[in-house]
Amino acid sequence: MAGGNRKRGAKSKTVGRAGELSEAGHDPPASANPAANHAGAGWSYERAGIDLRAAAFAKERIKAIARRTYTPGVMSEVGSFGGLFRIDPTQADAPVLVASADGVGSKLKLAFLTGRHDSVAADLVHHCVNDILTQGAAPLFFLDYVSLGKMDPAVVEQIVDGIARGCAENGCALLGGETAEMPDLYAPGEYDLAGFIVGLVDRHRILSGSACRPGDMLLGLGSDGLHTNGYSLARRVLLEEAKLKLEEFVPELGETVGEALLRPHRSYLRALRPLLGDPRLKALAHITGGGIACNLPRALSPGLRAGVQVGSWSEPALFGELRRRGRIDEDEMRRCFNLGLGMIAVVAAGAQDAVAAELRARGEQVWIIGELIPGKSGVDFWE
Figure (cartoon, rainbow, N blue to C red):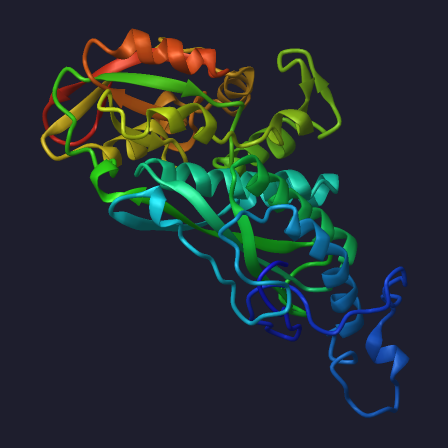
């Protein structure tokens, strides 16, 4: 990947993917049992389960993918030990860096079962972009971490392609990362995935919730589904309890189970970026694990409480299926799922209609869902 050399081993650690490269066009070595191939021979990294030639092959295939994401700030090339990025001094009078790290949780299980690895990789980028957006930051660069038990160049290429697509969509450079081949730690065909993002905001434009006041209004921006949270419960309900198949078409959903569960995690940067620094926008809450009840209070200053009008927005059909098939009570639904709202914006009283119209013009589903009231931190759901 861009920005540095990517070593391989039981635990490889560097920034970027490069190093010893196989000859272009050659296939990676066969994945036969290394111990059987070396019976009676001395021990080697390959016999211990680390395939350096497959790792080098994977690096070669993804170099061009990473370069697609380069922005003018990227100063390093593939092969260095660290990724270099130059901050444009004209971007902010008082620049502040905002960093975040995250994963996609057990949504990875759906990638393993379907063989679609690029989708969850793009989700990872979008999740991280939304997290720093809540503080008013736009992304500068992204780093990834992929760990797997057995190097599979085709899978790694899919993952990095999805990450690169997510980065390109958000104007974010894929500056580096790590791929670790760790035998015996993962079941065959499984891996873990994490992302790290750094963005920039002018100190005077940081969204901290300090500008929020009673009477400010809540705008809910629609999600396409679960995004990247609640999958442990969703899989139990749909795949184990209801015994549905991923390829099974469900009329109530209008699509297959797999399609509904793999719907992408939306990035709200394009829609909200024009509002950053606008005094009408007071705060943003990314609705992830913990739902509205846990995430909305994180964006507010002390002494403020949110009142949310139940039924003021449209839920994707998937949530109704989970509620019905899993016999999940409403409090649990609110604790676990986003329920159709991926981001909530707090806007100045009186500005809600105009801001909502602007967001709809940029392609978002938007509803006025409530307001801020005085009180202890928390959320009231008004029936």
